[in-house]
Image 1 (cartoon, helix red, strand yellow):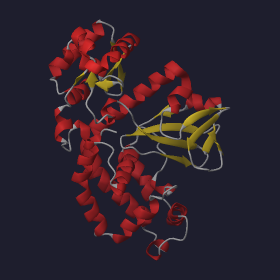
Image 2 (cartoon, helix red, strand yellow):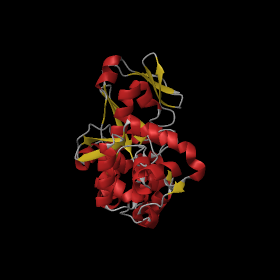
Image 3 (cartoon, helix red, strand yellow):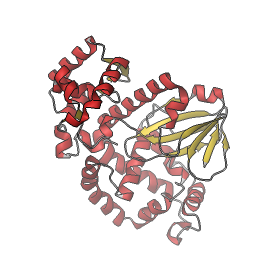
Image 4 (cartoon, one colour):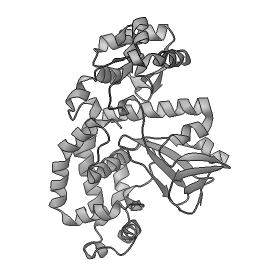
Length: 348
């Protein structure tokens, strides 16, 4: 297994950040594998794959670059510069474009696990080609819905930081992604591969959520390290939400549905999308639940996110014992239709 040695100061100074480029690269991986994890993602792929495949068919060199760069056990490092946080896509992708050609080729050799194909072996334009492809994926497949994606990512960060406050770093890290967990003894396992351990004490460590089911690690020299992980939460659930019958009788089915869907923090607009209820109805339900101290709210960036309180958690958990008589809630309009702009399209 691969693990990093992390001292207390590095862990104490670590933080969660959002990265438009990481989200774009995760989407590029999704387009490359054409493997959906839920119906909304399948709809997104069906809508985007023809243009993506057409672009690569017209540019065999870039197509070969993608196949080589996305290795089975190693991603070419220049494709995934370590995020800083609070950067635009343009600033981030510039680091891909500015990679030294000889370094890019060396990274591709490692990803391939052997010599490069002749078509790539002597090219100096590989960083530019990679940046151009990432920019196309951003402009055509990510940027149109970035605000919705950003809200989902912010909700995940709020949920992780709440878990951190309740259970410490071990609880916050153990569920990041398969293969990532706190081992004790200042050791953070980052994957299941048999790579030598790395000493990162004194470096900056960031955790970066993305909406597709993707994850990787990256570093910039010995100064900055990142763990990229798939975000979690109610929007990742492609199935119907089940409301215990007794909870529906107590609160009303619609209001209980709002409470049940708050397994992870969500904004009002997200609740509107996943419940199919109107903005006014969701707002009224949230006010009642706030007054009853079953939910709480906090700000994350430009969004206000709602989550269950300890009392709300106890109520939902207890009533879920009534699942044999549960009522299944319909998905929201975006989830049923699978539209590119629907909320289900980008859940993970």
